[in-house]
Image 1 (tube, rainbow over the protein chains, first blue to last red):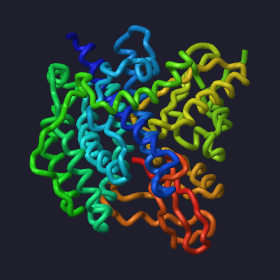
Image 2 (cartoon, one colour; image 1 turned 30 degrees about the vertical axis):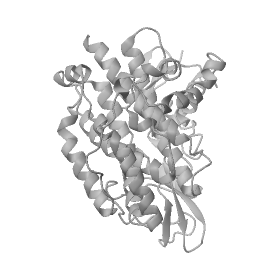
Image 3 (cartoon, one colour; image 1 turned 180 degrees about the vertical axis):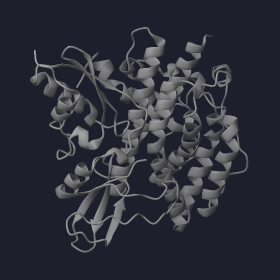
Image 4 (cartoon, chains in turn yellow, green; image 1 turned 180 degrees about the horizontal axis):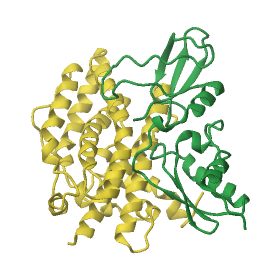
Length: 252
Length: 163
């Protein structure tokens, strides 16, 4: 594996996380519990889709095979997507969507803060840009965790169920293989182990405030980074790719 | 052939408006970062997006090309991400235009990582009252938050601070 190949794979992992999570959030359009939250969730979606465009453009350039960002986003098969499993989980109720968002936002912000120092100028620029947006995302999801966790009996129970469910996907966020090892050595990406403690500390702080608890250590699921996904991704891609598959090369 | 200066190009760019906030030019917004002469009558305009997913950027790029083509100039628009755009780059004139249009311009804000931080007081662009309330951090576009004035009771957009 060359450095370019590793960087290409890494960029796809960043791009796919933001694309799939952005798509999930877009499913809320017109279905939010209140108008303001409908708008908030689709705003988050727009930021994430914008960020994935930057990653895909850069990935296409690094690959140098003439594929465009649209080819990468819309025309790969399921096993070629390398997003983490957390972001492809279904929306569930509003509480579950917020919980998924919270667990990802904490990671996303810490990752971007470290990625700003990348020796790769373009990756650093994308991180710097995205970080400003993700700070808003994290505040939004943290505040809702507390509001709903420490809310009514009903909201508390729903949030605790969501925490039990989504926390199975936390360890995968910190997954590392030879792609990461090579890029860490080159100073292109940070070692995610370096901010694991900060992740756990922030999560614990907010959950305590929210009167919620992480479950006793339970089985952690992984596979997304290698293209092994939960059953949910296939259905998501069927919708995401529909237009490009049905009307190849269509634009608007 | 007459020579055109970079200052004149900046002047032409004043005519290119943000499609979502049409009182602001791309210069007022701080989206235009540089104007460079490449060769005789061939210019390069460097822009940066406000937000990663801002759908206005493609329209802005097209607007810049069209405006300079009108002057018989060829132009190439390039996009840079770093340094990342901040509302601090918005011109004073731009802030005034926003207010007159009914959108509250960006104010100094507390650190976005502070949970349940008391939102910064944003004066109502319609009546000037400071008795306003944030309805949602997320508004009609990525760059705006939604507020309401408790004095004149009008809802209004606030162009949120991005740093």
